[in-house]
Image (cartoon, rainbow, N blue to C red):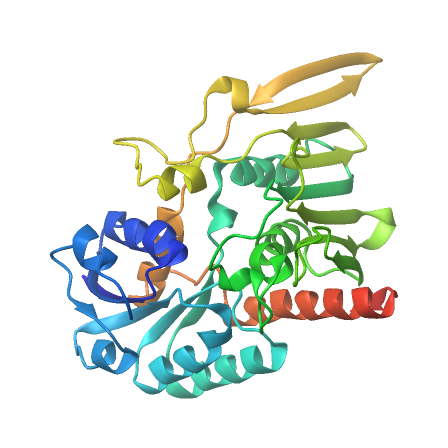
Length: 346
């Protein structure tokens, strides 16, 4: 049993970490750091609640620390935990700069500790189905991949630090790590990046929309997009290839379920009704064929199960420290591209 300390009990800590940790065999939620308020104690009366990182790290049994605090604190807290001899999971984004990220990876190496980033949307059921489709070559040579993450919120969310000016604020650092992860998992490192990062809402003070294009060989493009002004959102995923297309309209249900505190009693958390499955369209001999593709049987518990097994020496870490640096590099290339209005080569 691996004892886990959770730092932060906002939306990320409450919905996407505490519940998943509790549901993963071999992990025990041993302490929660909530600096203010009593929500953690009310939700988990059997779990000690502390008010500082020092208090949490004083609990000797804690082996793994999960950081779900505001983005600008990630590097400092992770550094403190590594020096205290703990393995670390950091919620995305890893840090607010590539420099900080590289320093953390080197520190983890020197300390002999594990460090990784919570790329949970890699375990969306629909994305797992896409990995299989791409791996099987069903679409032939892929020429275009789109991953869209749209919402409709014309007004600022009261009290949201992500919508205030500061390091790591804005939609690029909030959403793009998920979408970059999708592209890199499927296609590897791009040859170049072109980005347009902007504010679309008149009330916005930090970026609330982006279009990022990752350039690959043979004309292949991965297009990553997000906006806060989409009453009618774009399809969640689109793939076009030389032998067919795949389109998925709706979101994997895990996020909304976890936000509501709902966990299915059985089966994969990413299971969906057939009407929400993606549609694969192919053409052979001028005959168009369409079929629905079920979402794969995986969910966010698989992320933590891999971390558990990596700590115990039973598996290779799925989201390696070196990989997290690649994601951070794409984020910074996107910022530079948008700022200079140029395509940035890898």
